[in-house]
Image 1 (spheres, rainbow, N blue to C red):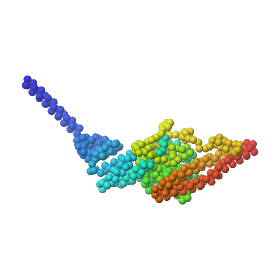
Image 2: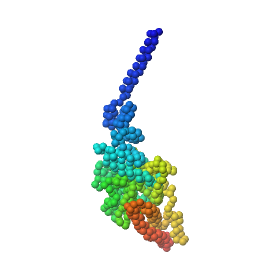
Image 3: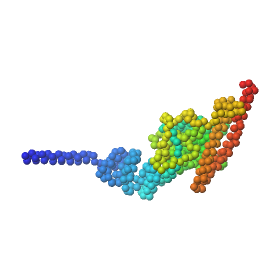
Image 4: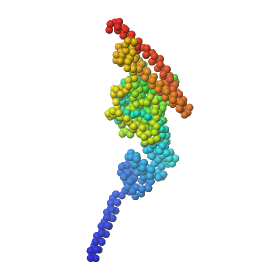
Length: 482
């Protein structure tokens, strides 16, 4: 009996010891040394290094180096949520964590938190850090982002389409009435390749385009003289030491949209707008178009078709390399600002995530489809004289009269748009907080008033001309028996 009990005791002891030994062997096989983790990290094998540092953290969860390296691995793998978690667990021994947190918060539109993180970094950084200049620039952009987020425009975005960046202009359903846009390639001084974009007016008499000068992309303009183009001139007051590109000139001939990655940009390229002051023969100081048109990423182009009351802007926000999204939207006659205390909702608007897809068919509408959904701007009956009227422009007998009438319609639409812009500018002037803002808005008001003075006599002239041309043509036809 005693022998049996002893035998069972020894067997139980053997099993326990075997289990302990097996656990030790398993642990030794799965254990990760700091040297192995560091080797994987330095070799930029971030996936394996991430797993290695996480194993080390299981035994030493408060080690700053392991938390910092785990966060960096996640950051390089673009897992920003996980990166944020481990950066926040890292102590002040690694101030560079605040630089990365500033970038993560910035790209997610959390600009106030980005400002705090970047300010903390710049107050505590190591003089040997290589990110100081980048942090200072990002800090200015975060200040701009915080300002823009308070004034997100309430724009109805009706569609979006992801396309290849290299030929995105071919996917814009641009009406011939707006002119033409072409896209080719440019090589900058640093060897990078960018777009060369040229806009030519509907009449074919004016060109605005990007080209390289001293290695960066700048904007130029040229006018056609009879059968040849005059020498191109660089646009003064717009070009900077950085890159300007992607021009589009509105039908009014004075409002220019373009993109720049220089001072005042939120990140990469931003869309700007300026107007030509015909009194001083110069361009007004460009203004950032704000959100949702601009983002922490590259925002390339703005095109607005006032006649059809639709517009497009192009951005690579949250897109894979080589792709851009074309957003179709309904332009506001007067700027409206989003008013909400819900930050998440505000950020969705700022990111252009609030898309109304009425009849969405996964393609941006063609000009013909857009025409079917807009209200015609012309009157339904065209009165020629007391006894004759037309129901449409296709009934004109005299081609010159029809051309004059269509030109009159366009000028009247331009006048209405200019009046709306003028009213908005006058309101902005009344609300301006400082003299510098009043001066800039005042110049805009003067330019718009000058534009109206130019349009009014032309409208009066065409109002008389088209009707007289048609009546005279009809009378001559009657006399000749045609």
